[in-house]
Image (cartoon, rainbow over all chains, first blue to last red; front, top):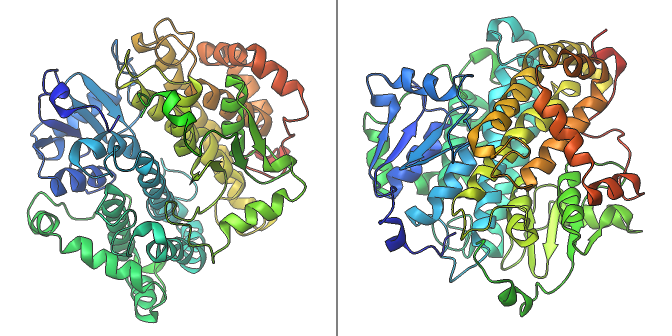
Length: 264
Length: 264
């Protein structure tokens, strides 16, 4: 897939800007797609900034939508539209964009590099995005936080004590490992979309649990991970994006700050 | 990736059987990899059936393991070793195996087919494997079920009422959609690994919640999905595998049957 020549693409319906379809008003899972597009300086539209953005999202995930001849219906946003292609699932969209945006190793240099990047992205999303979401919704996604506050308190305590350290410890090992080629980036010595995913995940977890993560940073056990975070944040295009209005503020999405769920 | 000629592979270290590294004693997430290998009639070893299988798993996920020059350390099994390659994350392993086992559309016929298959597999794993696991461990993966029984009861009630129907309804739409090319298989008119993933997910959820899923089957709302399940089950190689001793029984893994979590 990474070996498909770009010239071939340009003759198809895909000679079009990328279209990100995601809920307006929060970074959410759409943010991983935005960061990849921004880092690459790609041309894209974002339903978060379109007047009828919400309507567009809802039309795609309508339970009457059966998809079309080439595309199964999407279950949930983020959704990427590129010409005739419509795909969903955050790590799947990143997998599609990776070779096109130069955010995975070139297939001719490292045939299997894309699988290393994909596994790192999936792992960050599992532990530091999906599990982070479940800390405030451990019982039912469809019920209010207020209706599962007691359970959320218990789950958050476990998340802070066991799960955040497990995943930060894992990425510390990844950065210290040989396959990182120097420990600056997660894999292969160059920035990949897995680096952007880890950055956004840690940014969200820091927002949700500032005291707990602040303490972990001070303790110094995951030094490489926190340095990696700063390194991504300082990349010129990421820095400009984060300072822009395109970067939306955290609100009632995946990452929420409830003081009572953080440590004292 | 799908376009890599098989002949090229055979000259590398990958001219070797696939090695699945997974916990002995339960189907678990390793089962998705097994079903793909079995359907394709591939040559593989399975740590579940090796004398030191448990030791092998533990050596890979040891927190002192930093990986090697080409491979980041794996976080958790299932792990696939193929020659010098070591990768983890269930959907990532399937993505790697898909083109090699003929379980995704050929890239020359359908360049983006692999992304459709990947998104369907990710969605089934999200809703019918990860969420199914959380029904008995809503608070903490590292604590016993008995210590979170009350919360598990609440989460299971929501899972049965809202989540199982959401995901079965989604796959019903996928099968009814045009991109399935006839509704026999999820995508493109041919069996892909997404079909095997959905089969195993539904098999697990049926085991965990026999009354609730039995009722849903009788109600007929998700007829295409239940027919799809039988269709996968009757594929000759899958049928032979399920009848063999290689197919392990459900126990204390992802899918557990606790009568008190099922509906009355």
